[in-house]
Image 1 (spheres, rainbow, N blue to C red):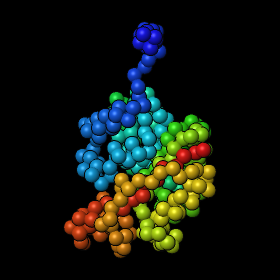
Image 2 (image 1 turned 45 degrees about the horizontal axis):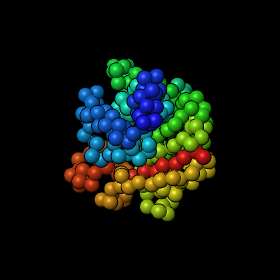
Image 3 (image 1 turned 120 degrees about the horizontal axis):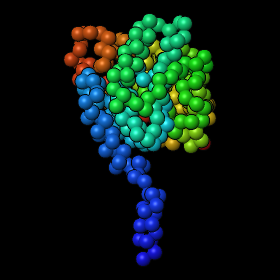
Image 4 (image 1 turned 60 degrees about the vertical axis):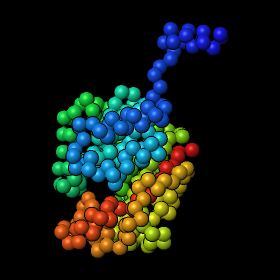
Length: 273
């Protein structure tokens, strides 16, 4: 009798709150976000390639988290993460630093569209705080030590090319709480691919990413094949941009590249000790 009485007393006093941690609850929230009418049709069409639910569950997304999404671009994953954390958490959209005096005009225009997208649906994006990141010049994507989860999707090759991969991973480490998680998805090169070739093709080796994260103080705690694509041969004339969604060669061999689908990608989970 003691346990039921204690439970009833706790409920009466308001000590029991609805759980926001259960995996089933998160899965249901993700299902609703993915099916939401706020999503752009062209983004929804890529769900089969990008596996958003499985990917975010692997990274451990919860609705009560403070999340930092690195370089949300046009907001593909923002459309899904924002509704999940809308009520109980917060999402920092850490965009490319368009306030930098050398920011390319096309990135500024894309950023304007992204901010307009957020403003148009406060019911969906009310938890989103737009910030900027481009380490080592711009590092205030969120208060230091405040984030539960930092996520980056298909960006590491850009930092390798710019020479600031080390600074970016160190900034992620600084943003996270102890025990916080860094989730990385990136186009995957064959092991042993030279760094110069990785940068040129957009495909990075798992070892490059792991080394960069470990050097910044992270510990690798998981790998997933959620975003693997064995049909991707990684030997195209214009690198990963030959494949969809970019299809850089236009109509040339388009049917072939559409049949391959989007790139083979690593999905890595790190923790800040």
